[in-house]
Length: 195
Image (tube, rainbow, N blue to C red; front, side, top):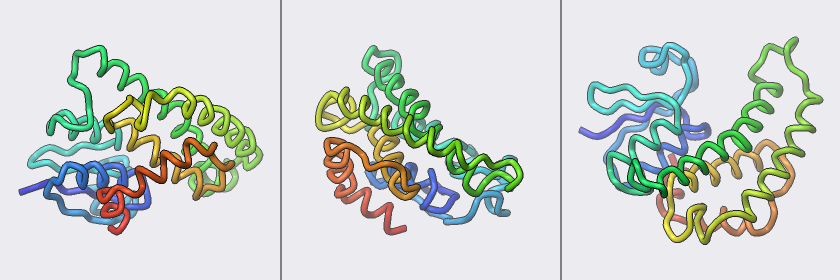
């Protein structure tokens, strides 16, 4: 029957679409906005993405990526291994040091009610993002975050890089740009981007 991904592709739902393409999995995509009826019938918060797998409803892009990678046994180290702990460390670091800064900038740009926005905070977020990305780029183990094989953190990191570019954050260091270009050239990335 396949999976159903709910959420527009120009959001964190892209991460899920990309991994499903990498896996060659059968899926249906409903490209809808947050808080739309299609979303709220499965997620009370109205956040995207939502993944339907049979009777199961999953939310949060990283939780979905982890579930899919574990279920298919690809793009992840096995649970309970030291390598998986290192992978999870990278995942959490990318979420904390990059994704959270991008999300906060978005909230102060168009998500929060106008009276609650503090536009000046975005300068600090951009500077911190640039420092963090420089360090992350220098610490990557090989052609991918974990070394020779692509894993969930690569999807998160590449997506954050594209999000930062769209949000006019400072230009990434060249090693990161080269890495992101390589991953964006993957057929699965291109197929997900076309949705």
